Length: 411
Image 1: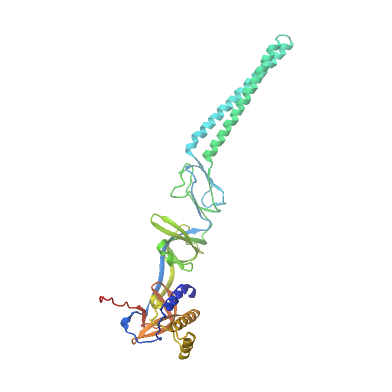
Image 2: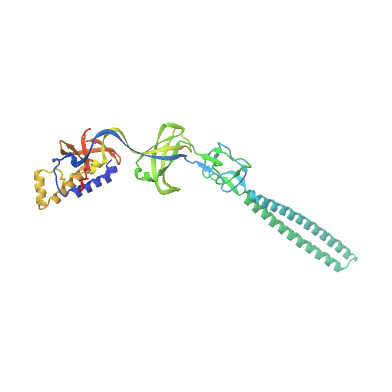
């Protein structure tokens, strides 16, 4: 509690030192009209910040297509366990299918050209061989044989060119096929497929409202992702208690352990929120991945306790001097050369140090027109109320400030 109230303590001591320029004792005559007061009462001290959240299972993922396309094949079903990077489905891009078909047609034409060139080469070789045999018997001249050799060489060149064109056409087919079917849908993490909406022929885009697949690694441990509205950020701390409910079980309150509060703003139009993460234990498996949660950050939660306004911790009487025995006061006056301002400053500092070490705070009540000093211990706190666990009784009139002096015009 001391660590949580540390800033409040420094505010109190700063005010105390600022006001110690003059000095009343711990009790002095006082008119009730001089002060603003409140009554120590029984009530609640609650500081609850509402927020919204969503439950996420460890290893859970919602998987969509990375590009627009049509599902060509699905390789998994609900209940299958998948590994990170495993192909779940294959897409084709409809706009690229005609390109692939054109490339396939060009490949068929190139294959026909190769076959035609092979036949032409075979015919040229047969003609050359026939002429060579006839020349050996003296029926044809050597010039005719040279012409036949030239025809063979031309046919060989034509066949080489046809084969090169066929290789190029095959490469275009492979490229077109890769462009049309290179959009595999893969699992980003290992898990079990808990939902599959994919089927062959389904047209999909990356912006589809529903994912193609959803995977999970079980629901024994869940993460609660919370969005905190910007105006409430100052009321949430990492030690705030987190409770939430889900629509499926609105009467069941669940606890979560806050892990972190993000510092990066999330903007949606004019609204700004910050992301917080909490751990949720779910041994019964009742809570499921994707459930929305109504979240409460509880900074204080004390019911029917003795409470006073928080402002009472900041009040100090005018000319306040902490209690000193006559001997202590004389010693202080001697050491300060009779300077009462220094006496008050030293006594206030010593009092603050002692109260801080003991975990106590100082408040004042009014009794029979006199200020009464109380050293109290506190419990739950909000900006409005402080729980008093020791040092006060219910019904006491607590001073929360000085009543403003009337203006010169009488108002």
